[in-house]
Length: 366
Image (cartoon, rainbow, N blue to C red):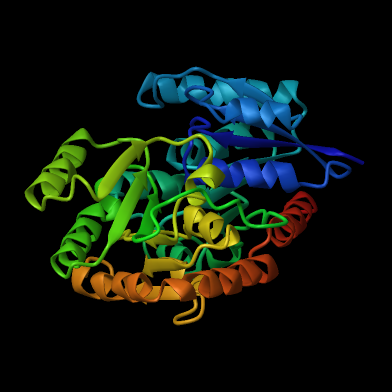
């Protein structure tokens, strides 16, 4: 018997949680589960990709969930649950994680919420909202042990409600074709929206030091600008360090694979992560990684084998690892191949979806 699942999210933007959700609904066993996605705010550019994969997308078209709009969101979602005859709801990101427990309670349908970061931005009112919603929630998924710790320590979530399910990624049959790039310079790349938590200022400081040491390199940074003030600060750093000819900000990219084909080494300088989907994508594409020691990064990046781990906010350590790859470019492909094999073994979509489907069955059985 096929059961109808509803995945709830704010919008299907090109970002980590949304790309993760795309992997989830694509990997589900359609003989067991029929997925629908409901966007609370707007469709977003990835909604079309969902529909191409046979997934229905509904949109409530709310401006936000504040005040009276919260009630509209709850009852709008309840209407979708009833009309679609939903058996279970799984929500992603803050707004959906707050609205879904109430809509599920009114519909007498079990709800699973999710956490994908360690709550670095949350204040007391956000934690209070979570604690109220958690009382109506059947399970909460976390994508790394660090996120489990956040749930237990800050949200005071009951341990028996927390399920650790790590991200998974589809590993292509072969790495993307390498795009043409400078022969005399290694190309570093970042894939993540432009906001302070991504720690790009520490990357720019490291790249400035590489330039001072006459290390040949280029750097590509892809991501939508979410914080204009922060973006202006980064632009100012590029100018002050005279890196204009070394660094390119590409904005939002539609094809992550095409972007990864242009780089030699993936860099993740984030100050906080749950478990970076972009990191898994890069490693699945055969790119070695230099990532900060936050969230689940250390689980994916094996030191000296698939890449390197550095402390967050430490440009000196970051400089050293980037320089290693710049001076040993021949090792990059070896690191990348080992990383690709490890992702296929431990972080596949099949493994992730198998664990999720087991959780769905468990929750449905009560």
